[in-house]
Image (cartoon, rainbow, N blue to C red):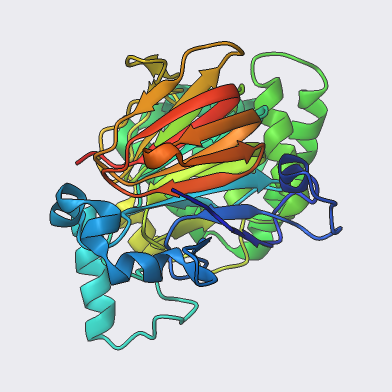
Length: 399
């Protein structure tokens, strides 16, 4: 087992205080958006095997079977199949959607065949993998996830009293669900930008006023008004109003599968995802929005946000159930004087302490103590027991 040295990514939407508070460091005044834990080549964690700090991806490349285990390598290849993060949103991230595996493979092959540079701003597919992901709140956390039912979306839009939104309200009330959602999203994202900017301004002013008056959509109106403040005139503000607004409490999570439009708005959480950079954006961004490709990938199905809560699976492990195998997220809440917890050793794992102090005990009386904000990589087939007083999130794979 090895303590990880991790990289903080300073994206503009990041909080200036949340990650420093978790790590016990002084804020720099600059945004600190994501703390990456894993072997992604963009910012791999580093560990010390006695010869100085080495990137985790290079450690795995040198001995994939030893680090990942036979089962994981045979199922996912010679690489860690997930990326684990602490995410600190101080401003909204873009409304976005991710392709499924077949769509990613086809889209990547097509752009490769057409010679689209990997770093081109209009490129949609950076790799041939899908990107299911999950966010678990460490603080109160606001987000958007999946489409509202058209009847509810029409009620929310109509409540703003903006004449330019009436055609969308009529479509949502008159058309079948999938057709209505597709038609309104396409119309919003394809509208004249100048006219839409005026509509967004009027809608934002109305949403801010209604948020103070209480009622069914007060929290959602407040969230949309905030998004409009950060992205004035952006059509994505209206697109966001088609989505469920959700406020997670600490320990609650959202799973974002292929084709589900979503956005993170504000708060601190741990995020885990398959190793992929494939993102199609719907708005709240200055980046490229490929409307035709987006409409092909989005699943136009309504439903609630699907808040997940952990389920006890034995020996104190609380598991967040998801339908994919590239990652498995769980947590341990360790009480003082409690018995040590034994962790299944078959697969590679990253352990993150988010509260208190915990100690990992390995073979030959080895041990490693983690304070709040610290993390460790445990290779496959290395038995570990865990004790102390605090909370530990465990990221691993199903193999």
